[in-house]
Image 1 (cartoon, rainbow, N blue to C red):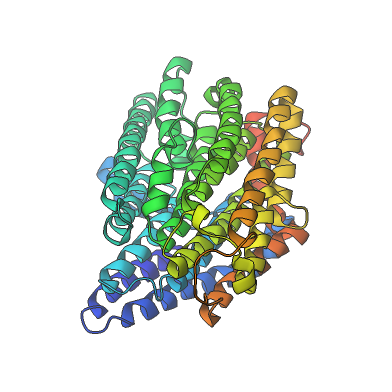
Image 2 (tube, one colour; image 1 turned 30 degrees about the horizontal axis):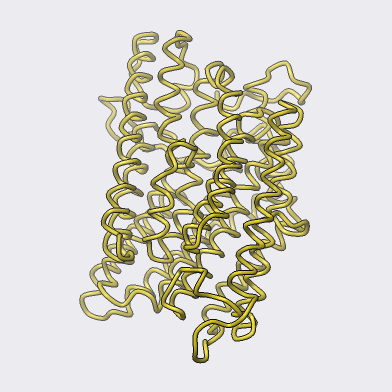
Length: 505
């Protein structure tokens, strides 16, 4: 019931915030904060309780699951389950949710009830995506998280918010429909083979599919996940969405929605189509490297701070794509670390961009300069997360990128050599952020206030998290290890990894 409770807390909190906003504009933000904090504490206590089990037991399919018949005539069940990978991403979801509420505290002053309703329902959709073990249910939650984000960008965004919202919706909705067609194809093929028509992930994983058909079905899933990750050339919606979204919208986009694309590849593409995934591994890694280099170059050329950070996400997600299709444990552990550390480091940069815009009323870096003198606390934190973005040792991003490159090196030497150049480019655009914003002569007049107490709490939580992940990543690695090992065994059944149960029965 814990898994159902997590979704109910968010959805009920959203509805309560919507109703409460009609009486008092401040009630919805407190309801949203309580809802997201309650879910985070539930998951944190569960993680602490399960830590020893996760660490020593790798023959267990799921840590906890909940299953009830939903529409049995069509083989649809309400099946939720989590393993170590899902648990990490759920903890991240509620952590980002708390920060999203806090950074919206003073920024959102109109239609607060509807705003926090959308915010909480995005979180509910993301949480459902990370838990759904029925493909129809997965698609349902996939759609739930998209529509509220459309409203978040379209109503509370910047000047070109309507254009950005439409572009985001068209890209994600069109690719999502391709995935739904692939789900239906898998459903009917399994039904024709076995006589049992079901959307159950566990049952569909064992479906025997002709190789030519498997490629097309896999591409239906891959396109949806590649758009969301995003993979070059499906990335063009991202800079516009980030540039126009409110601060919390950018935080959730970078910290959570992009992660659903990588999660989909790990959870669905590889287990459902292992042979087809192997056939596209090299082209996928090449696309990942293209994203690393292209995203970094585009980031360096930006003058708009939020668009710059958006293109760094394209570059960092290139590492994720390359690591997934390297098909070995080191690279996949690096992918999991990158999903967590990117959410924290890039999320922090978007929050800083929002704070700077609130004070200077611009995102143009050419109009900034010398902010370290006037805002030393913001300058110090900005330096920390600029260094995290370039992968400085001692911060979590270094661990993630090091593991991905080490794993990819074993898979394809020359692809890894080109990808490693992305580390140089990331240093260039990160140092440009520091130089253009915090150093140099002061521009503009008047005293600019430094962090408030609320902002200090937000940035302290992010700073502690990124340093902890850089100095002691073992809890994350141990938690994800059983799921990662099973994926590797699925792809390399004759590998020297100790034999364990199949990832699914």
